[in-house]
Amino acid sequence: MDDASPLLRQMLDIGQRARAASRALADASSATRNAALTAIAQELRAASDSILSANAQDVARAGEAGLDHAFIDRLTLNATRLDAIVSGVEIIAALPDPVGATTEEWTRPNGLRIARVRTPIGVIGMIFESRPNVAADAGALALRAGNAIILRGGSDSAASSAAIVAALRKALASAGLPEDAIQVVPSADRAAVGHMLAGLGGAIDIIIPRGGKSLVARVQSEAHVPVFAHLEGVCHTYIHADAGAAKAVAITVNAKLRRVSVCGATETLLIDRAVAPSLLPSIAEALTAEGCALRGDAEARAIMPMADATEDDWRTEYLAPILSVRVVDGIDAAIAHIAHYGSQHTECIVTENASAADTFLRRVDSAIVLHNASTQFADGGEFGFGGEIGIATGRLHARGPVGAEQLTTFKYVVRGDGQVRP
Image (cartoon, rainbow, N blue to C red; front, side, top):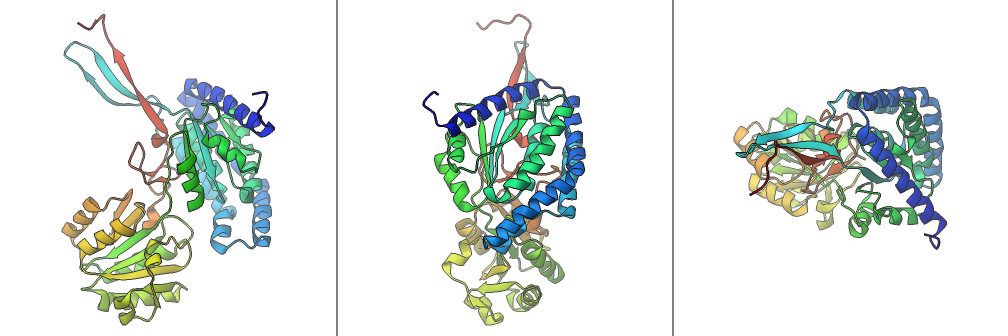
């Protein structure tokens, strides 16, 4: 420790304080944590002017640096978005407390009573890039689940994140909980991320990255602790042969264009050959009228004018008003395309055929599958979680929106009456 760099010493201290705070949270009553969550909503409202002012500084710097529109959109807060953040915290506060909940219980023939009980994970390390709202969502969800959290945001959102975390820490103190339950790494040095990935001397129990492909790939490659992550959202909307025309247009336009910068935005439209000549023109016209550029395969281009899609297009998360279009020969071909090119994030089928919908929902191996609903519903708030700490596309522990319940683990509580094992 004496030979450690100043940054490492600082990071290890952050980890130790987070671990101590996590023990206090685990011992705190549900009522105390509820009070802290209510106070967070109040403090965020009270600090709205300072948060928006700090965000305006971040956005101005991003513009001066020439960062792209999608990045700046993810970075930007306004009164409406801040209200949504506060509403999300209020929903989280109203959720049932997952900590201490018994998920299953049974009695063995020898009289032992066994229960599986939810417990906090402990200390979460959260590494994110441009979305400052993540600081509020992650802090509130971690608290709801009884966890301490260490936040490391990108330098582009540093002022916004600092202002938000200041409000969160003030709320913790007002509820009698340790402020160190929510900490933000004060250094922009990339080495801080490396220290977090190493686990801060055993202080961090799980890492959650939220950002671009390069960040998530680095975390998955270098982390010495478990990771909840998804690399990217290459999401699909499939227009089945029995799709309703009006739904096909409305869902596709919303799935692509409501917000192009979110990971649940549709990036590839698959349309059944049986209905492509009749439905693709109206879908394409609605998209292009809203400024969306289309890139299609040969069959799609034969029906409507659009650019030529390359092999890379089928694998691309555009995060921009660009959509790739492929004509497929039935549901099997659509499912095969998704399996080959998708990122196991979110997929939708538009159809009035219940059997086809059931087949799609059963066979598509993605974290979220939808029938007749926009892929933009891939969001913890829309699932009733109040918010999310990210969308997990792995298969272990948590999958899909990671809310408070997914930020718990469990232990077995066994009650006996003097039993000994023969």
